[in-house]
Amino acid sequence: TLHSGRVHPDELRTSFALAMSHMYKNEVPLYGNLVHIVQSENNEILMSNSNTMPPDSRERLTLERHGAIRLGKAEELYTVRRIFALLGMQPVGYYDLSVAGLPVHATCFRSIDTKSLAVNPFRVFTTLLRPELIRSPAAHDLALQLLQRRNIFSQELLRMLDVAEAVGGQLRVEQAEIFICEALRTFSWAPLAEASQTEYQLLQAENPILADIASFRTAHINHLTPRALDIDAARAAMAAEGMPVKDLIEGPPRRKWPILLRQTSFLALEEKIQFKSRDTPPPFGEENAKKNVGNLVDGSHKARFGEIEERGAAVTPAGRALYDKLLESSMHEAGCQRTSPEAVDDTFRAYPDTWDELRKQELVYVKYSFTGKLPSSALLASELGKPVVSPSIIESLIEDGYLGTSPITYEDFLPFSAAGIFQSNLSRNSKPLQVGESQQAARQADMVGLEHALGCSVIDPDVLYARAQEESLESSLLNLKSL
Ligand code: OOG
Ligand code: NI
Image (cartoon, rainbow, N blue to C red; front, side, top):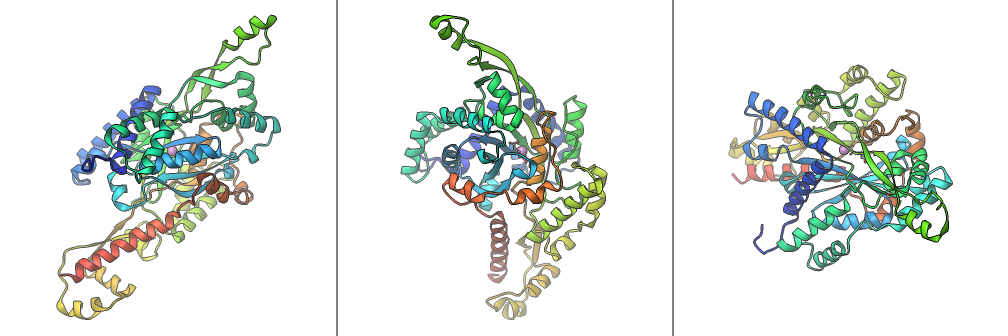
Protein backbone atom coordinates (compact mmCIF):
# COMPACT_ATOMS: atom_id res chain seq x y z
CA THR A 1 0.00 0.00 0.00
CA LEU A 2 2.89 2.36 0.60
CA HIS A 3 3.96 1.64 -2.93
CA SER A 4 3.55 5.05 -4.38
CA GLY A 5 4.45 6.65 -1.06
CA ARG A 6 0.79 7.43 -0.56
CA VAL A 7 -1.49 5.90 2.04
CA HIS A 8 -4.55 4.06 0.76
CA PRO A 9 -7.84 5.26 2.32
CA ASP A 10 -8.52 1.76 3.70
CA GLU A 11 -5.22 1.83 5.52
CA LEU A 12 -5.74 5.37 6.73
CA ARG A 13 -9.17 4.38 8.06
CA THR A 14 -7.65 1.51 10.02
CA SER A 15 -4.97 3.79 11.51
CA PHE A 16 -7.59 6.37 12.34
CA ALA A 17 -9.88 3.84 14.05
CA LEU A 18 -6.96 2.46 16.06
CA ALA A 19 -5.88 5.94 17.11
CA MET A 20 -9.42 6.81 18.06
CA SER A 21 -9.73 3.62 20.10
CA HIS A 22 -6.50 4.41 21.91
CA MET A 23 -7.63 7.95 22.64
CA TYR A 24 -11.05 6.87 23.89
CA LYS A 25 -9.58 4.23 26.19
CA ASN A 26 -7.50 6.98 27.77
CA GLU A 27 -10.45 9.31 28.04
CA VAL A 28 -12.91 6.68 29.30
CA PRO A 29 -10.99 3.92 31.10
CA LEU A 30 -14.19 1.90 31.53
CA TYR A 31 -14.26 1.58 27.75
CA GLY A 32 -10.88 -0.18 27.93
CA ASN A 33 -12.42 -2.65 30.39
CA LEU A 34 -15.31 -3.21 28.01
CA VAL A 35 -12.95 -4.07 25.16
CA HIS A 36 -11.14 -6.57 27.40
CA ILE A 37 -14.36 -8.24 28.44
CA VAL A 38 -15.61 -8.53 24.85
CA GLN A 39 -12.23 -9.77 23.68
CA SER A 40 -12.06 -12.59 26.20
CA GLU A 41 -15.71 -13.51 25.59
CA ASN A 42 -15.03 -13.63 21.83
CA ASN A 43 -11.91 -15.73 22.37
CA GLU A 44 -13.82 -18.24 24.42
CA ILE A 45 -16.39 -18.60 21.68
CA LEU A 46 -13.67 -19.03 19.08
CA MET A 47 -11.94 -21.69 21.15
CA SER A 48 -15.11 -23.67 21.65
CA ASN A 49 -15.77 -23.84 17.90
CA SER A 50 -12.53 -23.28 16.15
CA ASN A 51 -13.85 -23.48 12.60
CA THR A 52 -16.16 -20.52 12.64
CA MET A 53 -13.67 -18.00 11.38
CA PRO A 54 -10.60 -17.79 9.19
CA PRO A 55 -7.45 -16.68 11.06
CA ASP A 56 -7.10 -13.35 9.26
CA SER A 57 -10.53 -12.15 10.33
CA ARG A 58 -9.71 -13.26 13.87
CA GLU A 59 -7.07 -10.60 14.08
CA ARG A 60 -9.52 -7.97 13.01
CA LEU A 61 -12.28 -9.28 15.19
CA THR A 62 -11.79 -6.91 18.08
CA LEU A 63 -11.20 -3.78 16.04
CA GLU A 64 -13.91 -1.18 16.58
CA ARG A 65 -16.90 -1.50 14.30
CA HIS A 66 -18.33 1.94 14.83
CA GLY A 67 -18.22 5.22 16.66
CA ALA A 68 -20.63 8.10 17.04
CA ILE A 69 -20.19 11.86 16.94
CA ARG A 70 -22.68 14.70 17.30
CA LEU A 71 -22.23 17.90 15.34
CA GLY A 72 -23.76 21.30 15.89
CA LYS A 73 -23.70 23.15 12.59
CA ALA A 74 -23.84 22.55 8.87
CA GLU A 75 -20.25 23.72 8.22
CA GLU A 76 -19.02 21.15 10.72
CA LEU A 77 -20.75 18.35 8.86
CA TYR A 78 -19.38 19.66 5.58
CA THR A 79 -15.79 19.45 6.83
CA VAL A 80 -16.36 16.14 8.60
CA ARG A 81 -17.56 14.77 5.27
CA ARG A 82 -14.23 15.84 3.74
CA ILE A 83 -12.30 14.22 6.59
CA PHE A 84 -14.11 10.92 6.25
CA ALA A 85 -13.76 10.95 2.46
CA LEU A 86 -10.00 10.66 2.94
CA LEU A 87 -10.67 7.59 5.09
CA GLY A 88 -12.71 6.04 2.28
CA MET A 89 -16.03 6.70 4.02
CA GLN A 90 -19.10 8.14 2.32
CA PRO A 91 -22.40 9.26 3.83
CA VAL A 92 -24.84 6.35 3.58
CA GLY A 93 -28.49 6.50 4.63
CA TYR A 94 -30.64 9.08 6.37
CA TYR A 95 -31.71 8.71 10.01
CA ASP A 96 -34.50 10.82 11.38
CA LEU A 97 -34.10 10.96 15.16
CA SER A 98 -37.04 13.31 15.59
CA VAL A 99 -38.98 10.01 15.86
CA ALA A 100 -37.46 9.84 19.33
CA GLY A 101 -38.20 13.44 20.15
CA LEU A 102 -34.58 14.44 19.51
CA PRO A 103 -33.74 17.63 17.60
CA VAL A 104 -31.22 15.82 15.38
CA HIS A 105 -30.86 13.80 12.20
CA ALA A 106 -27.96 11.66 11.07
CA THR A 107 -26.10 9.71 8.45
CA CYS A 108 -23.55 6.91 8.60
CA PHE A 109 -20.10 7.46 7.12
CA ARG A 110 -18.78 4.15 5.85
CA SER A 111 -17.03 2.32 3.03
CA ILE A 112 -19.32 1.46 0.21
CA ASP A 113 -17.57 -1.32 -1.65
CA THR A 114 -17.26 -4.93 -0.63
CA LYS A 115 -13.47 -4.99 -0.72
CA SER A 116 -12.98 -1.94 1.49
CA LEU A 117 -15.61 -3.20 3.92
CA ALA A 118 -13.68 -6.46 4.16
CA VAL A 119 -10.46 -4.59 4.95
CA ASN A 120 -12.07 -2.52 7.67
CA PRO A 121 -15.79 -1.84 8.12
CA PHE A 122 -15.31 0.99 10.65
CA ARG A 123 -18.16 3.49 10.37
CA VAL A 124 -19.22 6.64 12.18
CA PHE A 125 -22.82 7.45 13.06
CA THR A 126 -22.83 11.21 12.62
CA THR A 127 -25.56 13.34 14.07
CA LEU A 128 -26.34 16.92 13.16
CA LEU A 129 -28.37 19.30 15.29
CA ARG A 130 -31.61 20.64 13.79
CA PRO A 131 -32.06 24.02 15.51
CA GLU A 132 -35.55 24.36 14.01
CA LEU A 133 -36.70 21.50 16.26
CA ILE A 134 -35.56 23.20 19.46
CA ARG A 135 -38.74 24.29 21.21
CA SER A 136 -37.48 26.90 23.64
CA PRO A 137 -36.48 30.13 21.86
CA ALA A 138 -33.93 30.88 24.59
CA ALA A 139 -32.27 27.46 24.21
CA HIS A 140 -32.40 27.82 20.43
CA ASP A 141 -30.65 31.19 20.43
CA LEU A 142 -28.10 30.20 23.04
CA ALA A 143 -27.18 27.00 21.20
CA LEU A 144 -26.66 28.90 17.96
CA GLN A 145 -24.55 31.54 19.72
CA LEU A 146 -22.29 28.97 21.37
CA LEU A 147 -21.93 27.00 18.15
CA GLN A 148 -21.20 30.02 16.09
CA ARG A 149 -18.30 30.94 18.36
CA ARG A 150 -16.58 27.60 18.05
CA ASN A 151 -14.24 26.11 15.49
CA ILE A 152 -13.68 22.39 15.96
CA PHE A 153 -11.01 22.05 13.26
CA SER A 154 -7.35 23.08 13.54
CA GLN A 155 -5.72 25.15 10.81
CA GLU A 156 -3.32 22.28 10.19
CA LEU A 157 -6.20 19.87 9.66
CA LEU A 158 -7.87 22.16 7.15
CA ARG A 159 -4.55 22.57 5.37
CA MET A 160 -4.11 18.78 5.17
CA LEU A 161 -7.59 18.44 3.69
CA ASP A 162 -6.70 20.93 0.97
CA VAL A 163 -3.40 19.21 0.28
CA ALA A 164 -5.00 15.78 0.04
CA GLU A 165 -7.88 16.90 -2.14
CA ALA A 166 -5.47 18.65 -4.51
CA VAL A 167 -3.77 15.33 -5.22
CA GLY A 168 -6.92 13.24 -5.54
CA GLY A 169 -7.40 12.22 -1.93
CA GLN A 170 -4.29 10.33 -0.85
CA LEU A 171 -1.70 11.66 1.58
CA ARG A 172 1.94 10.73 1.93
CA VAL A 173 2.85 8.76 5.06
CA GLU A 174 4.21 11.71 7.03
CA GLN A 175 1.22 13.85 6.05
CA ALA A 176 -1.13 11.04 7.02
CA GLU A 177 0.34 11.02 10.51
CA ILE A 178 -0.28 14.73 10.91
CA PHE A 179 -3.75 14.34 9.48
CA ILE A 180 -4.75 11.63 11.96
CA CYS A 181 -3.31 13.51 14.88
CA GLU A 182 -5.13 16.72 13.92
CA ALA A 183 -8.38 14.94 13.12
CA LEU A 184 -8.31 13.28 16.53
CA ARG A 185 -8.22 16.69 18.18
CA THR A 186 -11.60 17.43 16.66
CA PHE A 187 -13.05 14.30 18.25
CA SER A 188 -11.24 14.53 21.56
CA TRP A 189 -12.65 15.41 24.94
CA ALA A 190 -11.74 18.38 27.10
CA PRO A 191 -13.57 18.51 30.44
CA LEU A 192 -14.07 22.23 30.07
CA ALA A 193 -17.39 23.58 28.89
CA GLU A 194 -17.59 26.65 26.73
CA ALA A 195 -20.97 27.27 28.29
CA SER A 196 -21.53 28.55 31.78
CA GLN A 197 -23.40 26.32 34.21
CA THR A 198 -26.61 28.30 33.82
CA GLU A 199 -26.35 28.13 30.05
CA TYR A 200 -25.69 24.42 30.21
CA GLN A 201 -28.75 23.91 32.39
CA LEU A 202 -30.90 25.89 30.00
CA LEU A 203 -29.81 23.66 27.11
CA GLN A 204 -30.18 20.52 29.18
CA ALA A 205 -33.72 21.42 30.19
CA GLU A 206 -34.60 21.49 26.50
CA ASN A 207 -32.76 18.25 25.76
CA PRO A 208 -29.60 16.69 27.23
CA ILE A 209 -28.43 15.99 23.67
CA LEU A 210 -28.52 19.70 23.00
CA ALA A 211 -26.31 20.40 26.02
CA ASP A 212 -23.89 17.73 24.84
CA ILE A 213 -23.75 19.14 21.32
CA ALA A 214 -23.53 22.86 22.03
CA SER A 215 -21.65 23.27 25.33
CA PHE A 216 -18.19 22.14 24.32
CA ARG A 217 -15.36 23.18 22.05
CA THR A 218 -14.88 19.83 20.33
CA ALA A 219 -17.13 17.25 18.70
CA HIS A 220 -16.01 14.62 21.22
CA ILE A 221 -16.66 10.99 20.35
CA ASN A 222 -19.74 9.87 22.15
CA HIS A 223 -18.97 6.14 22.11
CA LEU A 224 -17.05 3.41 20.31
CA THR A 225 -18.34 -0.05 19.60
CA PRO A 226 -16.39 -3.29 19.20
CA ARG A 227 -17.93 -6.44 17.77
CA ALA A 228 -19.31 -9.17 20.01
CA LEU A 229 -19.58 -12.64 18.49
CA ASP A 230 -22.40 -13.42 20.90
CA ILE A 231 -23.93 -10.21 22.20
CA ASP A 232 -26.08 -11.96 24.82
CA ALA A 233 -23.01 -13.62 26.32
CA ALA A 234 -21.00 -10.39 26.11
CA ARG A 235 -23.75 -8.45 27.84
CA ALA A 236 -23.92 -11.05 30.60
CA ALA A 237 -20.14 -10.81 31.01
CA MET A 238 -20.36 -7.02 31.26
CA ALA A 239 -22.99 -7.30 33.97
CA ALA A 240 -20.96 -9.95 35.78
CA GLU A 241 -18.03 -7.50 35.89
CA GLY A 242 -20.30 -5.02 37.60
CA MET A 243 -20.79 -2.67 34.67
CA PRO A 244 -23.98 -0.64 34.67
CA VAL A 245 -25.47 -2.19 31.52
CA LYS A 246 -28.40 -0.96 29.50
CA ASP A 247 -31.54 -2.90 30.34
CA LEU A 248 -31.97 -4.47 26.93
CA ILE A 249 -30.42 -5.33 23.60
CA GLU A 250 -31.74 -3.10 20.82
CA GLY A 251 -32.80 -4.56 17.50
CA PRO A 252 -34.17 -7.96 16.53
CA PRO A 253 -34.23 -10.79 19.07
CA ARG A 254 -31.66 -13.59 19.11
CA ARG A 255 -32.13 -15.82 16.05
CA LYS A 256 -30.61 -18.82 14.29
CA TRP A 257 -30.12 -16.56 11.26
CA PRO A 258 -29.27 -13.14 12.66
CA ILE A 259 -30.57 -10.16 10.75
CA LEU A 260 -29.69 -6.46 10.84
CA LEU A 261 -28.02 -5.20 13.98
CA ARG A 262 -28.20 -5.93 17.69
CA GLN A 263 -26.54 -3.56 20.12
CA THR A 264 -26.30 -2.69 23.77
CA SER A 265 -24.04 -0.56 25.97
CA PHE A 266 -22.86 0.36 29.40
CA LEU A 267 -24.65 3.46 30.54
CA ALA A 268 -23.20 6.91 30.11
CA LEU A 269 -20.83 7.99 32.85
CA GLU A 270 -21.21 11.04 35.02
CA GLU A 271 -17.98 12.90 34.29
CA LYS A 272 -16.47 15.85 36.13
CA ILE A 273 -16.27 18.99 34.05
CA GLN A 274 -15.79 22.70 34.60
CA PHE A 275 -17.98 25.50 33.40
CA LYS A 276 -17.00 29.01 32.44
CA SER A 277 -18.28 31.43 35.02
CA ARG A 278 -19.79 34.16 32.85
CA ASP A 279 -22.95 34.14 34.95
CA THR A 280 -21.72 35.43 38.26
CA PRO A 281 -21.69 39.20 38.12
CA PRO A 282 -18.37 40.62 39.28
CA PRO A 283 -18.53 41.78 42.90
CA PHE A 284 -17.11 45.22 42.09
CA GLY A 285 -14.87 47.05 39.69
CA GLU A 286 -13.32 46.35 36.28
CA GLU A 287 -10.36 44.51 37.76
CA ASN A 288 -12.59 41.96 39.44
CA ALA A 289 -14.68 41.54 36.33
CA LYS A 290 -11.55 40.49 34.47
CA LYS A 291 -10.48 38.10 37.20
CA ASN A 292 -13.88 36.56 37.30
CA VAL A 293 -13.67 35.57 33.64
CA GLY A 294 -10.91 33.17 34.54
CA ASN A 295 -12.95 31.50 37.26
CA LEU A 296 -14.27 28.03 36.67
CA VAL A 297 -17.19 26.28 38.26
CA ASP A 298 -17.15 22.55 39.01
CA GLY A 299 -19.91 20.44 37.55
CA SER A 300 -20.57 17.21 35.72
CA HIS A 301 -21.69 15.94 32.33
CA LYS A 302 -23.23 12.64 31.35
CA ALA A 303 -23.06 11.56 27.72
CA ARG A 304 -20.25 9.17 26.95
CA PHE A 305 -20.45 5.39 27.05
CA GLY A 306 -19.22 2.14 25.50
CA GLU A 307 -21.28 -0.07 23.25
CA ILE A 308 -21.11 -3.54 21.70
CA GLU A 309 -22.72 -4.78 18.51
CA GLU A 310 -23.50 -7.98 16.63
CA ARG A 311 -24.39 -7.79 12.95
CA GLY A 312 -26.56 -10.10 10.89
CA ALA A 313 -27.86 -10.21 7.35
CA ALA A 314 -28.80 -7.12 5.37
CA VAL A 315 -32.51 -7.33 4.60
CA THR A 316 -34.29 -6.25 1.42
CA PRO A 317 -36.98 -3.56 1.53
CA ALA A 318 -39.50 -6.41 1.97
CA GLY A 319 -37.44 -7.82 4.83
CA ARG A 320 -37.16 -4.39 6.38
CA ALA A 321 -40.90 -3.75 6.09
CA LEU A 322 -41.54 -7.02 7.93
CA TYR A 323 -38.99 -6.08 10.60
CA ASP A 324 -40.56 -2.65 11.10
CA LYS A 325 -44.05 -4.11 11.20
CA LEU A 326 -43.16 -6.69 13.84
CA LEU A 327 -41.22 -4.18 15.90
CA GLU A 328 -44.14 -1.80 15.86
CA SER A 329 -46.64 -4.49 16.76
CA SER A 330 -44.49 -5.80 19.61
CA MET A 331 -44.51 -2.25 20.95
CA HIS A 332 -48.28 -2.09 20.76
CA GLU A 333 -48.49 -5.47 22.43
CA ALA A 334 -46.40 -4.21 25.30
CA GLY A 335 -48.73 -1.23 25.51
CA CYS A 336 -45.94 1.15 26.36
CA GLN A 337 -42.99 2.85 24.83
CA ARG A 338 -40.40 0.16 25.55
CA THR A 339 -40.91 -3.48 24.76
CA SER A 340 -40.07 -6.44 26.98
CA PRO A 341 -37.67 -8.98 25.43
CA GLU A 342 -40.41 -11.62 25.77
CA ALA A 343 -42.89 -9.58 23.76
CA VAL A 344 -40.32 -9.05 21.03
CA ASP A 345 -39.41 -12.76 20.93
CA ASP A 346 -43.07 -13.64 20.65
CA THR A 347 -43.88 -11.24 17.87
CA PHE A 348 -40.76 -12.08 15.91
CA ARG A 349 -41.74 -15.74 15.54
CA ALA A 350 -43.46 -14.47 12.41
CA TYR A 351 -40.07 -13.63 10.90
CA PRO A 352 -38.76 -16.66 8.95
CA ASP A 353 -35.63 -18.09 10.53
CA THR A 354 -34.22 -20.60 8.08
CA TRP A 355 -31.78 -19.59 5.38
CA ASP A 356 -33.92 -21.14 2.66
CA GLU A 357 -37.05 -19.25 3.67
CA LEU A 358 -35.22 -15.97 4.11
CA ARG A 359 -33.66 -16.35 0.70
CA LYS A 360 -36.66 -17.69 -1.20
CA GLN A 361 -39.01 -15.08 0.20
CA GLU A 362 -36.43 -12.48 -0.79
CA LEU A 363 -36.27 -11.06 2.72
CA VAL A 364 -32.48 -10.87 2.67
CA TYR A 365 -29.79 -9.89 0.20
CA VAL A 366 -27.76 -12.83 -1.04
CA LYS A 367 -24.08 -13.23 -1.74
CA TYR A 368 -23.57 -15.82 -4.47
CA SER A 369 -20.43 -17.88 -4.85
CA PHE A 370 -19.19 -20.52 -7.24
CA THR A 371 -18.88 -23.82 -5.42
CA GLY A 372 -16.33 -25.32 -7.79
CA LYS A 373 -18.66 -28.03 -9.08
CA LEU A 374 -18.05 -28.44 -12.81
CA PRO A 375 -21.06 -27.88 -15.07
CA SER A 376 -21.82 -30.35 -17.82
CA SER A 377 -21.19 -29.20 -21.36
CA ALA A 378 -24.91 -29.51 -22.02
CA LEU A 379 -25.68 -27.06 -19.24
CA LEU A 380 -23.02 -24.71 -20.52
CA ALA A 381 -24.38 -24.85 -24.04
CA SER A 382 -28.04 -24.46 -23.13
CA GLU A 383 -28.98 -22.36 -20.10
CA LEU A 384 -25.65 -20.77 -19.28
CA GLY A 385 -25.12 -19.83 -22.91
CA LYS A 386 -27.98 -17.37 -22.77
CA PRO A 387 -27.11 -13.70 -22.19
CA VAL A 388 -29.55 -13.43 -19.28
CA VAL A 389 -29.76 -16.29 -16.83
CA SER A 390 -33.32 -16.45 -15.50
CA PRO A 391 -34.18 -16.63 -11.78
CA SER A 392 -35.50 -20.17 -12.18
CA ILE A 393 -32.21 -21.29 -13.69
CA ILE A 394 -30.33 -19.62 -10.87
CA GLU A 395 -32.53 -21.50 -8.43
CA SER A 396 -31.73 -24.80 -10.09
CA LEU A 397 -28.01 -23.94 -10.16
CA ILE A 398 -28.27 -23.48 -6.41
CA GLU A 399 -30.21 -26.71 -5.92
CA ASP A 400 -27.77 -28.65 -8.08
CA GLY A 401 -24.84 -27.36 -6.08
CA TYR A 402 -23.14 -25.07 -8.60
CA LEU A 403 -23.91 -21.87 -6.78
CA GLY A 404 -23.53 -21.27 -3.07
CA THR A 405 -25.44 -18.59 -1.17
CA SER A 406 -24.71 -16.73 2.05
CA PRO A 407 -25.93 -13.56 3.77
CA ILE A 408 -24.52 -10.12 3.05
CA THR A 409 -23.66 -8.39 6.33
CA TYR A 410 -25.77 -5.39 7.34
CA GLU A 411 -23.43 -2.38 7.42
CA ASP A 412 -25.85 0.32 8.58
CA PHE A 413 -27.86 1.36 11.61
CA LEU A 414 -31.46 1.23 12.79
CA PRO A 415 -33.19 4.48 13.70
CA PHE A 416 -35.33 2.95 16.45
CA SER A 417 -32.33 1.23 17.98
CA ALA A 418 -30.29 4.40 17.74
CA ALA A 419 -33.13 6.22 19.46
CA GLY A 420 -33.10 3.57 22.18
CA ILE A 421 -29.35 3.99 22.59
CA PHE A 422 -29.77 7.75 22.85
CA GLN A 423 -32.68 7.44 25.27
CA SER A 424 -31.01 5.09 27.72
CA ASN A 425 -28.16 7.52 27.96
CA LEU A 426 -30.20 10.61 28.59
CA SER A 427 -31.06 11.78 32.05
CA ARG A 428 -34.23 10.85 33.91
CA ASN A 429 -36.27 13.84 32.89
CA SER A 430 -35.97 13.21 29.17
CA LYS A 431 -39.12 12.39 27.32
CA PRO A 432 -39.56 8.68 26.51
CA LEU A 433 -40.22 7.50 22.99
CA GLN A 434 -43.91 6.98 22.19
CA VAL A 435 -45.17 4.66 19.47
CA GLY A 436 -47.61 7.09 17.96
CA GLU A 437 -44.95 9.71 17.63
CA SER A 438 -43.16 7.84 14.91
CA GLN A 439 -45.87 8.59 12.35
CA GLN A 440 -46.23 12.18 13.34
CA ALA A 441 -42.48 12.66 13.29
CA ALA A 442 -42.04 10.99 9.93
CA ARG A 443 -43.24 14.22 8.43
CA GLN A 444 -40.40 15.98 10.21
CA ALA A 445 -37.61 14.24 8.34
CA ASP A 446 -35.40 16.63 6.42
CA MET A 447 -33.04 14.65 4.24
CA VAL A 448 -32.65 17.58 1.87
CA GLY A 449 -31.44 19.72 4.77
CA LEU A 450 -28.87 17.11 5.76
CA GLU A 451 -27.64 16.76 2.18
CA HIS A 452 -27.39 20.50 1.89
CA ALA A 453 -25.15 20.57 4.96
CA LEU A 454 -23.06 17.67 3.65
CA GLY A 455 -22.65 19.27 0.27
CA CYS A 456 -23.56 16.01 -1.43
CA SER A 457 -26.37 13.48 -1.44
CA VAL A 458 -26.57 10.52 0.90
CA ILE A 459 -26.20 7.13 -0.70
CA ASP A 460 -29.14 4.75 -0.51
CA PRO A 461 -27.92 1.66 1.35
CA ASP A 462 -30.30 -0.58 -0.60
CA VAL A 463 -28.56 0.38 -3.81
CA LEU A 464 -25.28 -0.79 -2.30
CA TYR A 465 -26.64 -4.14 -1.07
CA ALA A 466 -28.41 -4.81 -4.36
CA ARG A 467 -25.21 -4.02 -6.20
CA ALA A 468 -23.14 -6.34 -3.97
CA GLN A 469 -25.68 -9.11 -4.61
CA GLU A 470 -25.67 -8.50 -8.35
CA GLU A 471 -21.88 -8.40 -8.56
CA SER A 472 -21.50 -11.64 -6.64
CA LEU A 473 -23.99 -13.33 -8.96
CA GLU A 474 -22.31 -12.05 -12.10
CA SER A 475 -18.84 -13.07 -11.05
CA SER A 476 -20.06 -16.53 -9.93
CA LEU A 477 -21.79 -17.11 -13.24
CA LEU A 478 -18.70 -15.91 -15.07
CA ASN A 479 -16.60 -18.41 -13.10
CA LEU A 480 -19.07 -21.14 -13.92
CA LYS A 481 -19.14 -20.32 -17.62
CA SER A 482 -15.42 -20.00 -18.01
CA LEU A 483 -14.81 -23.61 -17.03
C1 OOG B 1 -25.68 7.88 18.34
C2 OOG B 1 -26.63 6.75 18.59
C3 OOG B 1 -26.67 5.83 17.39
C4 OOG B 1 -26.08 3.39 17.30
O1 OOG B 1 -25.24 2.50 17.56
O2 OOG B 1 -27.23 3.15 16.95
C5 OOG B 1 -25.64 4.78 17.44
C6 OOG B 1 -25.46 8.76 19.52
O3 OOG B 1 -25.79 8.41 20.66
O4 OOG B 1 -24.91 9.85 19.26
O5 OOG B 1 -24.47 4.97 17.60
NI1 NI C 1 -23.58 3.20 18.46
